[in-house]
Length: 305
Image 1: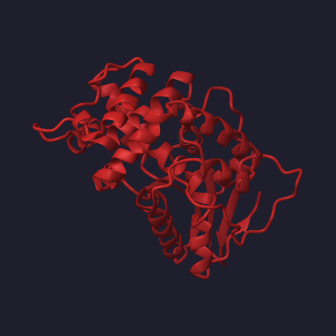
Image 2: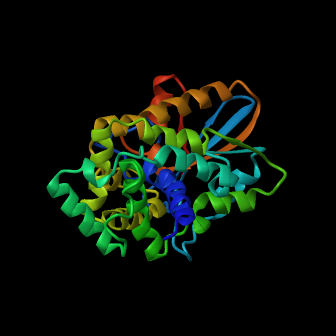
Image 3: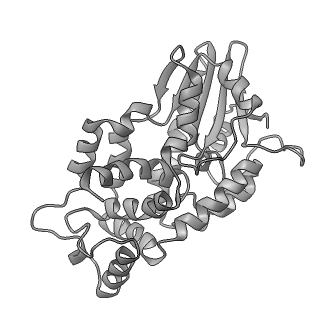
């Protein structure tokens, strides 16, 4: 994989990892109405008052070809919305400036090497994992552990056929058309900065989670897609709980962001209009979900499917 493709893969990886591999802790119930047992299709919620409605839709950022999920209920909610909100703006993934920003944050100082940061046992497991991915032992020597971990987690999915171009955000963007206003909760550079700010030991553990089982992400995301398509949020949370367990990483990648997004939704309710908000499904399931933070702010969340 050349350097440009590596940075592009890492850009795709952040969105996927932050919403799947990093949903930690035991799943908890949120104060949301249950769905009938015969209901099928990805879950969708709404927050509304007299003049504002915000739809909350959980996404999977990369999917294999042929997964049919864009049904009438989702289409109707999108068509009724005047604004589409995603984690980052669609164009950022392929923006050369964004890839340069990743490169700046990902590169180690000239006198450091990634493999020198690992214990002997970790180095052996790491090099073996690289070999299983068809990569040389020194592939990421010049990069920080978080970058190597992100890329190693996403590559097996890409090799299996998972593709951001088939992901939910891409389909929503295409169907939304040019007439709707686009907003983003974050920037790609800001997302990458979250990883870059992690303590070194947390970064190494994140890397080694990928190295110890290079196929773990495939197994988890395969099952995640099944539960997502069923609209089974409780089972989706359980699947994601097999991921990382480092509380520092959990707070940085998931819980703190969920709290920030709940605040954004609460504030946005002061503006009239209809918003379709699409974020990674992991942010809308399990402990300290966006809905949970909204409930603690006194905002009622209604599951509509």
